[in-house]
Image (cartoon, rainbow, N blue to C red; front, top):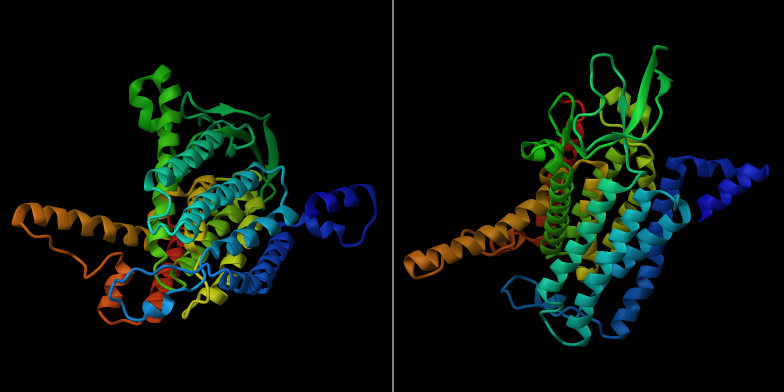
Amino acid sequence: MLYHLFSYLREHFTLTGAGLFHFITFRAAMAVILSLVITLVFGKRMILLLQRRQIGETIRDLGLEGEKTKRGTPTMGGIMIIAGMVIPTLLFANLKNIYILMMLLSAVWLGLIGFIDDYIKVFKKNKEGLQGRFKIIGQIGLGIIIGYTMYYHNDIVITREVKENTPILYSATEKIVSDPYTRLDDKGQSHTYVQVKAPVTTVPFTKNHELSYSKISSFAGEQAEKWLTPTLYILFVIFIITAVSNGANITDGIDGLATGVSAISGLTFGIFAYLSGNYIFAEYLNIMHIPNLGELSIFVGAFVGACIGFLWYNAHPAQVFMGDTGSLALGGIIASLAIIVRKELLIPIICGIFLVENLSVVLQVAYFKYTKRKYGEGRRIFLMSPLHHHYQKLGYHESKIVTRFWIIGIVLAVLSVVTLKIQ
């Protein structure tokens, strides 16, 4: 809103400082500051309100050290995170930008599903919360919207250089949506570009980076490719959003773990968004240029600021838990960011913690069922799943577990950024 106000003032009046809102870096910094203020200042009041209303977490008896002290800790703190993201984004971002609109939708959509789940647990005294199938339906619904929008919306394009003896379009599902235009590089040489509507993603560790989803469906022939490609793409988006959202939900088992890992992952995708949205950086790094993507930096700034502000109260010993209101939203936001930035194939690296936590549960359950069927008794790979509980059972303090998981998350984030130059 402020972005549009100051854009109007800059266009029609001479107002000192109005031009600052033209710069993405300034607005991203302001989003970080405001999100911190919202979560730190108003977060304290919200925690007191939750305590007065006795909106506390019900802790299962897992035989873990310190779990009894967590009982009654206020939950549904994810509302703080969502407010810390949404309000700065509404104020400082360009609300006509399709990428911003998709991220706001992701935050509110999954935040609402998580809120309903927490509401049932706390107020209806139902420990199971919202039935799993309804959560999955909600995640699938968001996946369909994000996938369909990414594939068909006219504002979602990439830039390709026009070169002699090199095709501009790689399949029947791609189309040129702009007239050719020229730009000068740092050596003063002229290059011609066009904007292309193409279902492509980034492949790490390869020279040209691009992979078209149409190649997966090309075996079916040109006619079938036109409907098979969007179908496969949307199904893949649904899988990503569901998997990462549930991964964040599973990771949110000890104080500060999901919050810190989410901030690291979100910041990494924010760096990719800024670099890919700037044609100078994109050309220098030889990566895909995605027009108008840099605007996502404002949302990511608010996202990281909200996570850090919430971490102030969520670090051990936690004064508040995010609940499913926060964890489902955080995972869904990170998944949507990966898809929009076209770095979904980097999810196993950037979201490595979520992946390992998810796999630990899947492997534990599968192995238990297999051994019970084969030997008559269930056996376990880990002392307890998810993985962070395994280390708690080994005697590690949860602060040490969280810190080490953060370190691993940072290493994975740096590795993913390095892939920009490894080609």
